Every structure is written in C-alpha cells, then in structure tokens.
Image 1 (cartoon, rainbow over the protein chains, first blue to last red):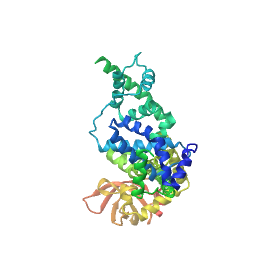
Image 2: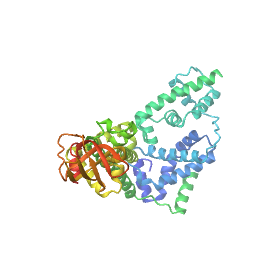
Image 3: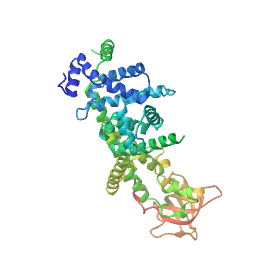
Image 4: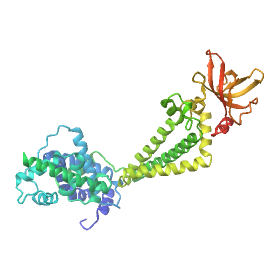
Length: 187
Length: 241
C-alpha cells in the first residue's frame, strides 16, 4: 500500500473498509498535532476529536476530488471539527503546550522580524500564547503557515478562502503578532 | 494496526457507517450552481423591469409632482424591485460561494461580475420589450403588485393629494366639465375652467388623461389645474394592457 497514491487508497477503502487504516495511520500524527495546536487541549480530547474526523472523512469519502491534494481535504475536515469543538466549548481554557517545536519558532520569529537571537522555551511559549490571542482568522492562517508549513494554495483549500485573502491575512496576522510580542516584551 | 485506526474502523463497522454516494455530492453541487444561475436570471429580470419603470415614470424628472422628498423617492423609484434584485444577486452569490470551487473566487469580484451580467441582460430584456411584457404579466396576475412593485398607477390615484387619472366618459364643453372614470373605476366630475391643457390632450371621449388639481369637499368633484396626456413615458402601452 505504501507505493499507492492517496486517491488509490481512497478507492481501495471504498472497496474494503479495512484499507482505511492506511489513511488513518498516514495522517493521525499530523492531524493530532494540528488539533492540539488549534485548540490547546490534552491528548485524550484531541484523540476523541481525531476519531470523529476520521469517521466524518469516511462518511464523506466520495466527496474527495482527486484534482486536489487529499491532505488538504482531510485537513479541512479536521479544521471544521476543531471549530465545532470550539463552538461547543466556548469557555475552553487555553493551555499553552510546554514543548513547542524549536525550528518553527526560529522561522516564525525571523519572518516576523522579531529581534531575538536566541529563543528560549519561555519565549517560544510567549509566541504560542500570542498566536492564541489573535483573532481566529489570523490564528488559523498563521498556524497552517508556520506550524503546519502549508503554502498559500494549500491554506486556501483547507480554509476555503481565496489564496489572495490568505496572503493578506498572513501579512496582517504577522504584524498583529509582532505588535503583541513587542507589547508583551515591554510589559 | 494503531490504536486510533483500530478504534475508528471498529466504530465504523459497529455503527454500519457507509460513505455517502458520490451522486449526492454531485447533485448538491449541480443544484447550487443551478440556483446561482437562476438567481442571476431573476436579477436580470429585476434590472430589466427597474430600467423600464424608471424610464416610464412621470415623477423621476418632475420633482414637483411630489409633496416632499420621501414621497418622491417612494413614487419615483421602484424600491421593492431594487431590494428584490439585490436580494437575488446576494442569493446567487451565496449559492455560488457554496459550490465546490466557489471559495476560490474573491467575493467582491463575484458580486461585481454577477451584477454586470444582470445589468447587461437587464438592458437586453428592456430593449427587447420583454421587461415591459413581464411587468404587465405581473400587474395582471400578482395581487397588490400595483401597490408595491409598480406604483405608477398608485401615484395618479391620490385625489386627496391632487393627482387623478382615468378615461373621459362624457364632456360638457359649454360648462367646462367632463366625467372621468378613474383607474379603479370610480366616477368623477372634473371642472376644467381655466385649466392648463398640455399638448396632445384632445379631450375626447375614451381618452386617458392625467390630472393635477384639487378635490372639492371630499366629494367626487375634482377641479383640474393641469391636464396631461396619459401616454408618453410608456403609459400608453401600460393602459392598453
């Protein structure tokens, strides 16, 4: 199955549900990380959401259009489930993870031009905390761009917004993030 | 098999969950596209009728026919048609945005494009006379159409405000009086001593005229100050229908 494309695995799954494990196993880690980055929830809650994502994806498998990337399609379902979870849990406490990925923060901090030569763990938490405080529209694109490393077209397909809008949201989001971090630095 | 994939597949099997058939997704997308196009067509009809009603309205260029700016707006502009047309365009935009690939397009561009298409087809409908034909069909078949969508008759059916229209039933030229049957069928006695009678008004029996003047003592006597031909600005064909 490893050599098969996502589309072929989708077809195989439609023939036999047992083949769905290749899709689930291929995406579970990425999607679990994405859910946690979006919602700042514990592993158990994130796994529960992920299971719902895969069930919903299976139910809607015939809506996948092979013209586009399967990963974007399943990321979209994940994104929608995360948004639904947020709607149902409006008072969700935002726990910032303790072990942020260091590479991401070097890219992000240089891209938003933060003057920090050595970013330590507390500063990484600060950046994640700042992202979590942004408006949802900026948070969504910044997480996909810098934490999931998606390009503009991929973000457009996941969030269902024009790629031009993705570009402007990222630019404005970076400015807002920088302002938040600078304000926090002064405090 | 990993824990999550095992749980997911077991749950799918236990609950006997089946993938939704492809035709349902295709049908939904086609339905959204069709609804979007249908609303563009409705928008075009709306624009066509708006152009027709604006071009064939006495008040639009004659502000003095209104007692105040509010009255002028209400009678000069087909407000309900304008709102309805904007609604059709928005609904068309909404359905298009919800198609599989609708999100790829910029909202402003979609709205602008659908407006341009509707205006263009609206002009074609107006120029070909179809807009007028449709307006007449609506007038005949939709209850209260003349009170809401096409208020040109309503404008000339306000004797208390000094506006009256209808057909001449009989004339007494010696006493400068004629009998008029208004647009709702009510009979009036019109005095036209010293009245300004605009060109093309023949004061013949059966002729349709529009009268500016004053109602006398809340009765069925109306003193005309100015008599205008009914025809002009598209009213002749409206009368014939």
